[in-house]
Length: 214
Image (cartoon, rainbow, N blue to C red; front, side):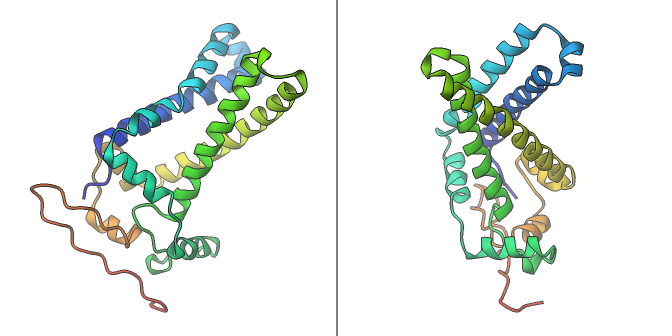
């Protein structure tokens, strides 16, 4: 089953590369052992600044893609089944019928919203730190505090994201090739109804979970 278009996979890869550069260079700037190992602090600062400044660019360019815009709309919608998914996740109930999800589950939606918001805050605070004439010293001091602690939170979130991806080879395959196994889709995303691809038979609809069903 087709899950992601080529444009979406390229947007994801470019964003991941830029985010990785931001986090690695941040570690080299703030962790003494890494700073001593890498050296060339001025170069590291420059790479960090420009990778952060360019981080929103792949998503902005990707808005020309109809598939990307459609997925953004799905990520921006939070329905009753998403609340059910979250309750089941908190109870560690792993039954497919207890975790109804469309193309994106509630965890993925929350992670996408968190990442987008955090990236914008990091960009804003980073600009205040980079261009010292934009704001008074008090603002720049606050921006530095927010930037540093949010960077730690982002690093933790990214590590969790990577760990989830490592634990789900089929999800990685979907982002790598654009296609996933139909059985995996029915199990993990039972409410997802992908549009048929030209020249292919439409996928067999998954039966949505029923209240009280075991």
